[in-house]
Length: 282
Image 1: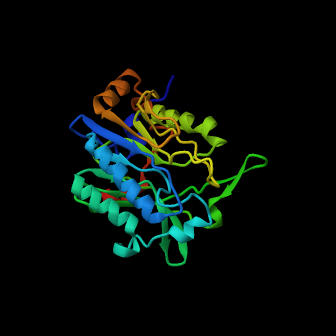
Image 2: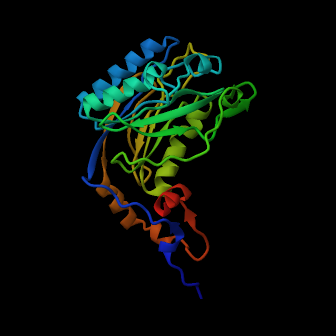
Image 3: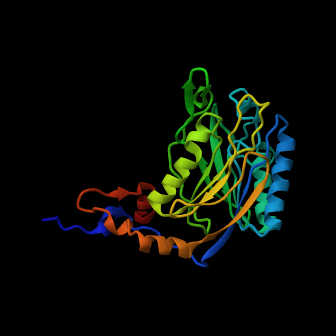
């Protein structure tokens, strides 16, 4: 005889309710990067403006968009985000653009300098231009495949310590990333579709465009995946902008079709969101 269980007890605190209105128009802008930071900032600003001009309400930039993706470049291009202003021209641009265009920007990531440490940091700006969240990459990318690729983020970067949840008005998992020519073909789409199906949520990823002359060559293929693991929009490896709609009614439909959330075993395990639980208690 199966044990009695209450699926509501499997998640603490309870899951957030889906937002209204039911549709958000999202954009992925994946500009190419150079060693010229001023050029990179201006180029990203133009991509954001183009996306907003096409109706995007949420714009996502790629990982390390203001700098080449290399350990030599991280210290050179790092910014003091907390100081702001001239100390962080990249985030100053994101703040100004978000406010002027009245959009939400998930600012990919840039190298952040804090004291004597460097972080791979993503900043999220609301329509008012204010910083809504700052996420420091928790799981640094270290890889060593002889004859293929060797890269160690931990050589220069420090790992963050906290997950980040921010209310952007869109229920999705967002991954600014820079997979390479080895992991990209194998893992990029696979991991996105798996996370979308596991959580029955949209998954958005944004990669830098591919530059074969760079020391680190990105795979590209920025993508939006739906809550059933279906690829809704994607690109190849060239510099471009993709626009897609996030329809929340589809999340509700898929969770009705395949009620994974209702099948969680609260008698056997709990999924605890410690950060949100603490905010509720405080």
